[in-house]
Image (tube, rainbow, N blue to C red; front, side, top):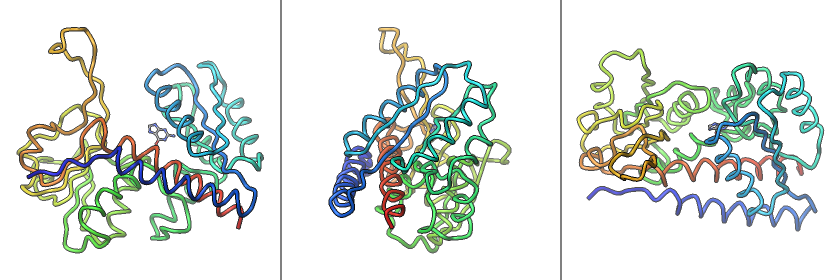
Length: 293
Ligand code: GUN
């Protein structure tokens, strides 16, 4: 029988722990955890994600600040906002939603966020701590941290002897995911668009993690029988079968056919997605504890 991971349920248990920790911090020190989320432009999917993040921060009892900036915001204006948020002692986490509109350069913006407030784990200091195996000193990117919770619930803390393949090499996901798997002793391959015979590489994976942004690209014959398959893709596609002109969400994995081969698989929606938000809340309360000393 294939196990389909219920990401909402796992995320709910993380959120419960965050609420308890945040309350305890307030009771012990008077500090209320604070998160600022910044969005620039009009991308509807990004707006939906950002609203969920702000709403969840409120539900966790945090101070939740959302800055919604117009499409024509300049690099200087965005940089100035980040400085203001850096200097605001009531805020422990800052997240600038990506991608930014094309005329803006995201890298200097991300690198200008104070590392201790970089709850996305994208600052070179945080990426570097992860790369050098300092898992507790920095902040780890939320989606890989969430995916790793699923991996460890399935396989335990030590992945010695297991082959893990990550498809995708982004700074936001593929690279940190590979580092986390490596830190847990897995034998890790990072595959990407230039990889030769991707299907064969994937068939070697005991743990297969897909983050490519290509709807249902991973097919059943890419999956090793009994593997754990983590689907990080969120793709909105036409759904003519609905007959109502609406779209539907699918992952990077052809779920139904891969579920026949895998032992454990995550669905889309309801898999990794809810965990990203839960881990963002976890990172924010960790940042608040560190600040409180
Ligand atoms: N866009 C899609 N996912 C993310 C994320 O985890 N963080 C940020 N900042 N932007 C995103």
